[in-house]
Image 1: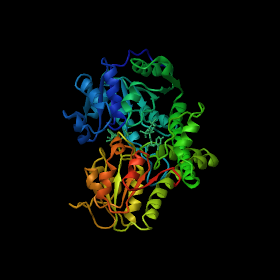
Image 2: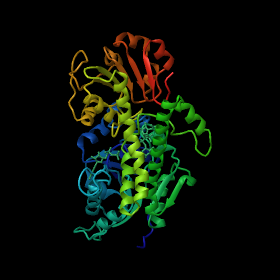
Image 3: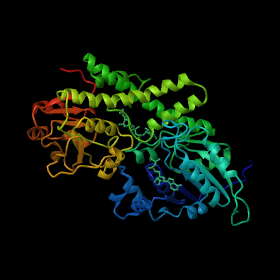
Image 4: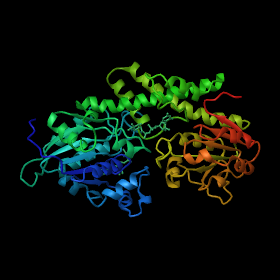
Length: 477
Ligand code: UDX
Ligand code: ADP
């Protein structure tokens, strides 16, 4: 297709006001005051929360997001449920909707469920006017752009105001932001990746980013390379975590310390020091989903050996979560039935309220299954979200003790530890670094344990308080 010359982008619509769409558009609006940015979502409550004058009510918790929103919202950043109207007004539409792993049908447990992406493509095909750039922002299986394009290019029953059918260019522009550091990652990205079919379309999007991203950080590839790069980047990162977690288990068995090993191997400039923190297993909406997607693709393209190589990264992650709950039961004399256990941290990592695929979910469910009474504390993840993840209602009791095999949510760590046999730290929130272990020890039932999967507790102070300490990746004294 020959694309006519396009003026620079003046109006952007983003479909999906989630963890990716919301912060990404907020930063684009902040850095490009000349572009009108509208984020649309079918979820009215979510849009209302994005419009709330109380910035503590934003649906996504991200350090620095409130400041960006307060600068841009109402100036050139809008949140709306008027999907069709916003698409019609836009030169460029970002698709940033959820793409979870399919739970049934073909590819169940591996392939991404693309029903929301397809619905978006149909909405865009129906409502767009003139030439519209359609940008894939959600992480998608390789070759999804072709699906989107074929829906967009199918003859529509409407034509735009000028009496002509709309035309489309599809671009892939995967998001590499990590939650908790999203604003920093967006404002100062390692790279921006744009995959496209033709140079003019790629430049239209590159022009938006060039308002704040240095030219050498804007990478241009074909669409398929861009889609595959996102899956591969996440697969490599997740692989690194499974690798260090596997070594953590070996450290515990041999008397080595995984933090020392990580320091030593990370000093090699070919490996680098980042992403070597052993923990309870990776969580979040991307890693598992993207690897499973990769596995599905490999099978699809007749590469079973490559598929099983990557699948092992997820298997090791599952093993790590189960190993932690098993170990805790073992240390508590082989049974946790009727015992109170304080869970510190439910978000999949610190500085986010996101609980999707959090390792805390599997570990909590295992302990509930064993009959434990969990008192869950998290500074940001809310009780409704935890309830949804655990699929069992909270058992609220004034004393903080529910029946066997139950969970309760507590606002205060002190309430969580009262009468507990163990504290299990699962998220590396800063506030768990400075806990008063002496005071906590007086409230727990002796002999009491601290299980620290993130190495955040002050180990000397825990031991001085007379508590037993188990740290992930550290051999026994
Ligand atoms: C990830 C990618 O980093 C990002 O580029 C992509 O766009 C989306 O997926 P995110 O899931 O937000 O981002 O968080 P990330 O910081 O990558 O952490 C993922 C999981 O790995 C978390 O559960 C975290 O606790 C765990 N992790 C990370 C470790 O256990 N150890 C580490 O050293 C780093
Ligand atoms: P992510 O982490 O990728 O941002 P989220 O689940 O947080 O994913 O957000 C995706 C958002 O997309 C949800 O708020 C959902 O309501 C919205 N969404 C899904 N399909 C559509 C659609 N067809 N039109 C508008 N919004 C949609």
